[in-house]
Structures are given as structure tokens and as C-alpha cells.
Length: 280
Ligand code: SAM
Image (cartoon, rainbow, N blue to C red; front, top):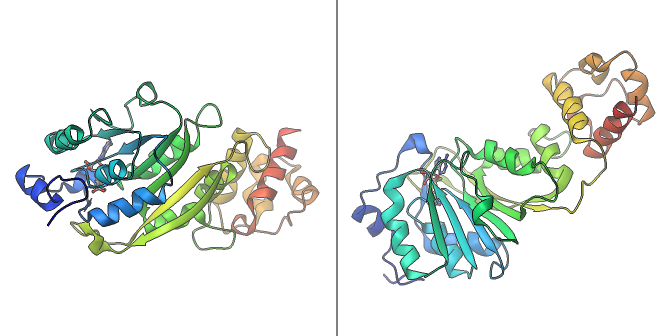
């Protein structure tokens, strides 16, 4: 069967390079190049962008990104076994694919990227959330990326886009939605991957806002929401007691009933509370 880029089908690549999937590296590969092209397309126009991909593996999504016209792809892969397969892709797209072997939690990618940058990745489940939190909490905002199109386990995707009172609502939703527009663009069944994981996956798109949706000090917002969600089923007047004696009056001042629970309170109200606490 022919492929979109003239390279061999991924099953052949995996066989040729003996890329038996390793569970400890979160290796669940996408082998359908129509699907990887669709994920790449969901990231929007890539022709004027550098793309950061974490965990290219045998390169299915990498091929999709290049086929969809990405200006350049910087791929960071921990498993050196994938290098020969990725080198074949680099040879078929001269000057457009740079591969760094290393741990994405440690590699300094900024030195290798030129703006504008989009992050597009099928993330390894064991480090996916940690990478996301890092990308969402840079020292300065706007961040180095304009959008991120990321595959997670579906449950993590639902935590990112969750709204108050929803089962998955919590600190990750607040963190993501404070400075990004977020949406789920695709849900994939386990059979889309080789080997198939136990759960569904979903692609989330996060688009960086130029400034936070509601102004407040990030550190204070983090402190308030950490304390509130640490005891998410308790009334806020009790879970936030540690913020000091005045907290009940401060909750009321920003229109939050002190008997409400964290999971009922939206981002705007949490930001208002963080502003009042910071102004003490
Ligand atoms: N992008 C490929 C695809 O869609 O078929 C592979 C995705 S697989 C879910 C995750 C990939 O991340 C694997 O290739 C794995 O080796 C790599 N990986 C795991 N931990 C990593 C880390 N800390 N830094 C960089 N890559 C990592």
C-alpha cells in the first residue's frame, strides 16, 4: 500500500527496526497515517510554524506534521531505538526535521525553536500531565508556544476542559483555562493504537490567550485553589480556614457563599478571591 510521503508503511518500519513497544516508555503507537494526518490538520496551518513534538516514536505523527506542511519539526524522543526510523523521515524532508534524543523533561527545546511555535504530540501517559503543567506555567506569559494540540488519556483531557460541578473539575481545568482556550478536538478508541491501551484517548487543543482571562496573582490563585480542592467536598469556609480568619468575609465580598464547595466555583470567582487575598 502506498503512503502519503513515499516512506514505507509504519508496520513495516516497526518490523524493520524491531521497535517492540515498551510499556515503561508509554509506547502506544499510531500506525494509521490518515489518522496522524488528521491530528496534524487539527493543529491548523503549520506552514509558518516550528512544531515541537515530544515522543515521535516510529514517526507516524511526525510524518503527518511534515505532510501537512510544517515549516520545521523538532522531535524529542527518549528511546534511541527510534532514531533510524526518524532518520529516514528526516532524509525524505531535508532540513525540516531535527531529532533530539533525550528526556523531554530535561531537554532545553527553546534553543532549537524559532517563533511561532506550536506543540503537537501524542504524549507518553507517564509524563504527559507534568509536561502540560510546565508548558502552562512558564516564567513569562505569553509562552513560547501559540497553541498545543496534545493527545492524552481521555480522562486527563476531560480534566483539562472541565467546568464547575463536572465530575472532572479541579485545579488542572482552572490552570489550563485561566490563560488558554481549551477544547477536545478528537476522541480515539483504544484500537487506534498499537498496542491498544486500556482506555480511550482524546486530543485537546489549548490556544494561549495574550493575557490571563481574569487578572490575579498566579501564586495566590495556586495557593487558594490548592487549599480549596485539597478538601473538595468540604465547605469553602472550612477548607480555606488556613488562609486566615478573614476568609469567610472575603468569600462573601466576592459573592461566593462560604457554604459552597470548591467544585461549584468557577474560574472568575476564584480569581476574584485571589485578588482580595492578595490585597490584604
Ligand atoms: N508519536 C508516536 C505515535 O503517535 O505513534 C509515539 C507516541 S507514544 C504514546 C509516546 C512516545 O514518547 C514514545 O515514543 C516514547 O518512547 C516517548 N517518550 C516516553 N517518555 C519520554 C520522555 N520523557 N521524553 C521524550 N520522549 C518520551
